[in-house]
Amino acid sequence: MFHPFARYFQETYRCYPVTMMPGNDRENVTFGGKILLPPSALQKLASLHIEYPMLFEITNPAHKKTTHAGVLEFIADEGRMYVPPWMMNTLLLEQGQLVTIKTTTLPLGKFVKIQPQSVDFLEITDPKAVLEQAFRNFTTLTEGDIISISYNSTIYDILVMETKPKGKGISIIETDLEVDFAAPLGYVEPERKKRDFSAFVGSGQRLNGKEGSTAYGAQSTTNQEQESDIPAVLNLPPGRLYFGYPVVPLPKEESKEPEKFSGSGVSLRQSKKK
Image 1 (cartoon, one colour):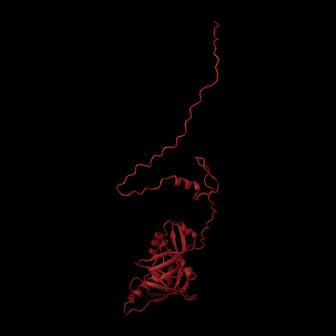
Image 2 (cartoon, helix red, strand yellow; image 1 turned 180 degrees about the vertical axis):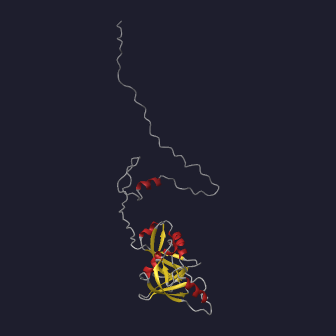
Image 3 (cartoon, helix red, strand yellow; image 1 turned 90 degrees about the vertical axis):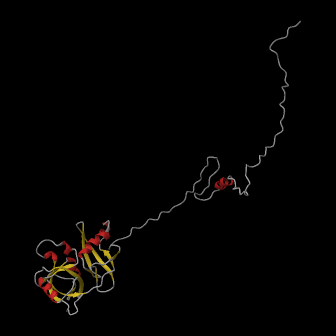
């Protein structure tokens, strides 16, 4: 945002990766979206009444490549600016090449779709939490950029596929940003093997000696027979009780008297003659 009487800031600097800056490693710059400018830039920005957050458009005039960034500190050597290594690659820059930088305004981002550039990204158990932490080092996102983040000593490159609102870029400072993930580059969905399933087609034997059905899962005649053995539900009118079916005695068979023994017998004792 600009002061009503402000003019925009524009300068040309020689660009270098932050890894070439003397001093300790600055991981928040290496794996972030902010740049380092010289102290003179701060004086000019203050004189122009540029309000925070300061957003910049960085252009490589040789290849007409453009991206966006915020500023972290004003500690670079005069005439130089330091950027993350991924930004050097995005702008197709060589070390010490001249770039043009100017202030700009960007809308607050509502949506971003990203694509990891390696299937190794799938090994992260909670990617949204990792991105939320990584985006704290970014001020802007530009569609088409391949940014780099670090997690567990591993570097992951991520393509910014789409941003909303549509435009040259978005600001992600103090905004509720919805993140959508595309399948990682090189990811191939595993093929699902189709298994030919056939139901049991053998024959079975029942304990009561009856033959079982020949097709598993089909309604068999045996099941129908079992269902026929179940008494039907009695729908009795109110006030009537049921005490069972009437007893019908079985027909009596004509009983035959057993034949008496009609043979002759022999006595073991001999009769005495008188």
